[in-house]
Amino acid sequence: MPTSQETPSKRRELLTFFFLTAVLFPVLSVAVVGAYGLSIWIYQIFTGPPGM
Image (cartoon, rainbow, N blue to C red):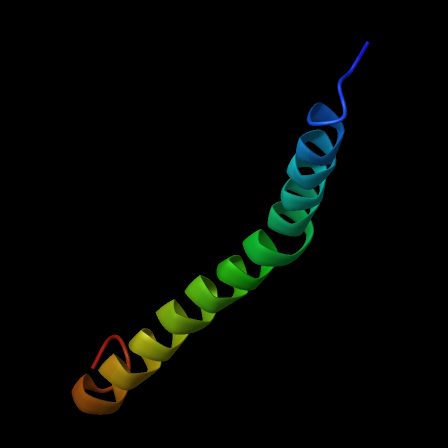
């Protein structure tokens, strides 16, 4: 039988899991891909397009 202290902890853990999987990881992945694309774009501004 769960005690009263375990229930809020489990609920908080579940909410943290959903926050990480539904909010934080998608935002971080978009930010990483965007930063990578921006860095390539800036690099090509200074060096020219590939093959030149």
